[in-house]
Length: 401
Ligand code: RFL
Ligand code: PHB
Image 1: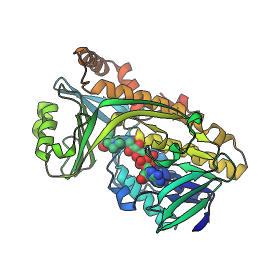
Image 2: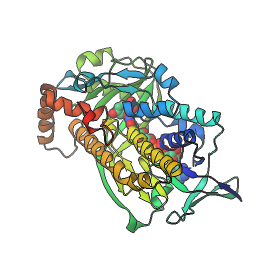
Image 3: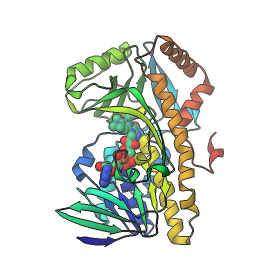
Image 4: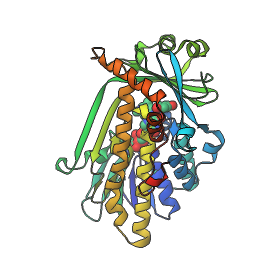
């Protein structure tokens, strides 16, 4: 039994928890992270790939962006593929020069872990049975088990950054929280391969056989996804079957130039829209996937986690620096406004691009009309582009050109 005292106890060492810890450290605020898994397991999860400029800016501020700027790929546009042809969405031209950066979540996580280790900040990995206590008072605690003993962390605040299945949201009394959820009737089967990208930009495809996405991690590493049934299993998909299915969904020229190779990772992810309200319960704050999930089509999940963390880190800096609770009092409301906009965009883009199993035919026709409209109307394309690059933070609304 040990007792550790810190200012902010962070649950979860995913991108949200690690980034929060790094920012707080830079503001002189003491923190400790408790993570259920081992560091290698966390790094083995292949997830997001697209960073908004505001996320890159925050990683700059956290002092962890040297490799991101050296290796990240700046993308000024992406393509929509439907009816056998590709159409470019010129993000830069439609948003007054904005772009996104392709840099894997795994790499962001690795950079944050290295910075945390270099600064000598404490992270407890493989912490079992993490539990949160007394966050409705002024002396919250977390407890966990490790090496056969129970340990306690006493803190001023708890940041619940432990993802959708974590302990933080689950420890909030039922009557204090409201959740909104939509589960889509399909999943994404993704593979990672050391092959050159089929195109230098991402390709989002709407096809009669289902959605497909061509993405990448570097000039030599690719990430591809195909829509699959919700109950499908990775074991059902050999590499050859995956490449064949992907090829069928692409336009002929892209299919022709696709370079295939052995997969180095293959997984299926369900698609879900989910929001928990509010995001603050006394001295507990939820951030990232612990509070909300978006289907990955809009590439918003990691970016939303970063924007929550930005608000929370600034609010805690204000609390410790100026003895003002104004930021923490507004945290939930300010985050949720941006979250719901990203939820809307992700739901819209998902609905536009996927084959719906119960469609009598009308959904596909409506999708096609909307896709035609999108690539034919600058107004429609602008709406899509400004959401994709990331909406501005509150107070900067005028920045949207
Ligand atoms: P994470 O990454 O889930 O990390 C939570 C951490 O908490 C730990 N944990 C616990 N620790 C202690 N006690 C407990 N009881 C715990 N329970 C859990 C977990 O082990 C884990 O280490 O949440 P975080 O930090 O909020 O980060 C969110 C992002 O991971 C997520 O939103 C994105 O990956 C979503 N996402 C994408 N986001 C983007 O912005 N752009 C993209 O291109 C993008 N593509 C994607 C995605 C997610 C995907 N999947 C698999 C859901 C593509 C896919 C396929
Ligand atoms: C990815 O590269 O993993 C990725 C890219 C764009 C998305 C989702 C995932 O919309």
